[in-house]
Length: 337
Image (cartoon, rainbow, N blue to C red; front, side, top):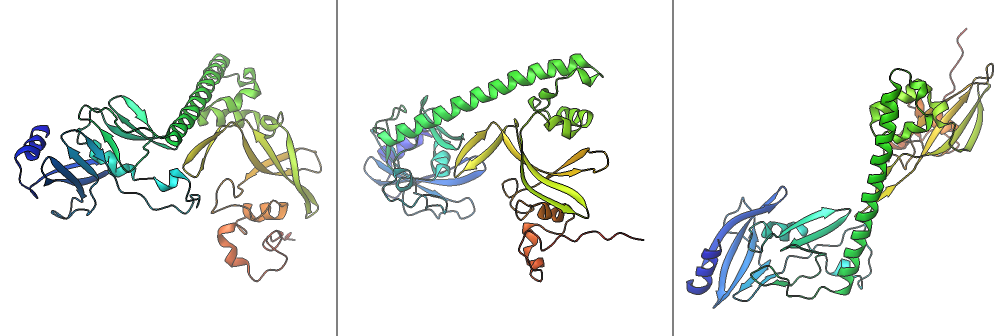
């Protein structure tokens, strides 16, 4: 490829072209190396199903001295800030375009990756945040353009997130290994397992086995419960409670991955008036899932959701009811005599 480009640069005629194929991840393109004048080649991107058709704007420019990347800028996403002064918005470009070009191996050890919610570019062993529509490299892969301050700041943010995530995962592995050791030493006598070990197990099968053994109420007992609503239905007391448990969860804020050490869970608490014992049943809130959850934090809404009579995804079924989302849908069971 190098020899062909060198020959095109030196001996090729204007508008003469080389064609090759490259791609990043699951996206592939045709790349057209077109000589535009002496010692200068423009690289255009086309698709694999329309031979001979390519973009009007070059994604890269080649001379004897440098390779300059100039990928197309992306349109603003609906979740992005509208500030025109934000360089991350004004200079955001398609990571796929440049990743496909780098796959041609014109720049030594060049590739792109997505990590911890950030687009990262690496060329010749140097990592940085892609920062401009015109990034220059020499033919040995050395970066000639100066990395702007904001790009360095973003890369440092990525390093902080990566370090924090790795430390969190390392602590999780440590606690998981210690909990596994105690679990295996207990054998069939699960009573020997500390109840606080339950959520230290990242393996859902072991966690479920311990919850089934001890019972959900006993497992959650060490953690603070907050009552958000109370109601008496058919003479029976109900409570809607929220409990923060040490269960690690991941969330996306825009394009950034946020790792939470705890999870806020919502349960319907049902008390047996004869024995005083209670039972907890998990219910989904909008924070858990958008499409099938209780309409609001009330006992009646939780009862209706549990019985399949009330959820956010079926609000249009409830227009005939009065009283708002909290009490429109729950139908109290009728005692048969």
